[in-house]
Length: 79
Image (cartoon, rainbow, N blue to C red; front, side, top):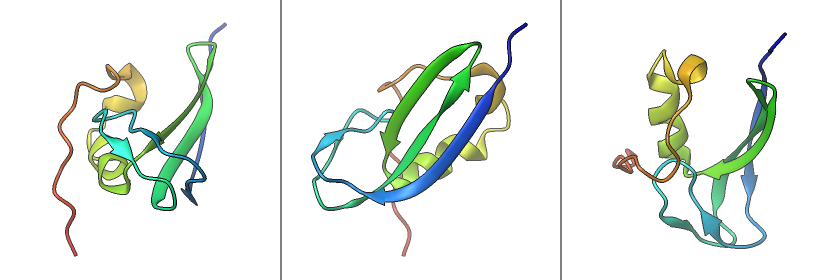
């Protein structure tokens, strides 16, 4: 039996790392969304720009079907 669990929170990065959504670098000391959990029985742990996390969550099928990492466009940040 396969099951999915997800938890996410905004964090301040201690080191630079690529955004799982767009692949661009998220700089050390900036805010990022950290998601972790289990999808189709596999553990995951990733970081995204806040605007990339919003774009991913705007698609109702993304949580069910997943996405290809680093192959999506980074949306413009509003505000």
